[in-house]
Image (cartoon, rainbow, N blue to C red):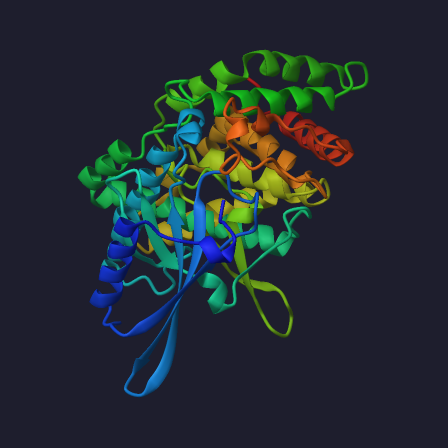
Length: 413
């Protein structure tokens, strides 16, 4: 986690890379202030630093604002989570994939391009001191939505349409530049479950799914309870089989589609969301588009907004096809609506699992989460398994989500 302000520091190598970037940007004489970029216990996999640079150009005082993400210097955490690989993937997404997305959008003169991510500036990818320097979008007016409250329909639709554009870019690249798409696939391999190596991940998935099962009534929810009980007993094998299976319609996926990874900009008069910035691409991999959709929709909605679930899926597909048309591609041929619904039914269980993990976080109210970065006493990983002091919110939300998932006819296996 980010430390108190007076001890926020970069390593010598990290500072050298940052200074080289500033020099390349034409910033030579400046003052640098480093401060925590995130609240304590809000990020398990990194040190997030706000870097504010004040400098003068042509007698004008200017300020540049950055976010620096650093891999935590923790051998303990490295054994529990694929921290180093996560940074390698995120750096690759920002420095390569997004640059190629920008290039093909310029090539086809896209009037409203996908740019719902921070600007990438530089990185340090090759040592355990991994670092990535990004635009601080909060200085542009973006802000977080409370993670403890479901999103309303306007927020949800805005994000769904951006995921449609993100996914469409993968199809456009695969159609026009297949070798480049293959390169994307090679460099975004799943590193969380593929080898069942990281106990922190395995423990937390099983813990949260077991808690979700307890939210169901074995009598009143009998058929759903039986199906979910099977899932709880086989959750790791079910997810691993889905993730490792070959998928014809796979796209670059965000995966970690939680509310904390979305920042919104608002109209100053109506206060309606006008834009979204998607952050934290460490989990990214090629995956069925169903995974982003089900992870996001099932984790951020309440039961009322999920009544418009089919409408959201239709809006997603319309946006995807419309965007692909600008690249000279037939979206209905690349991802037929019927096939999309088949993907949701088959691979939605991966998204549901992610959604349950996220709902558990959203249900953690007025409770201090153990600090796994700074407290070495958590070396066995048990801090990931903290129990909710008041599980009622989680129980209600997760029961509704599992019930709605089942009512859609989606598979639990």
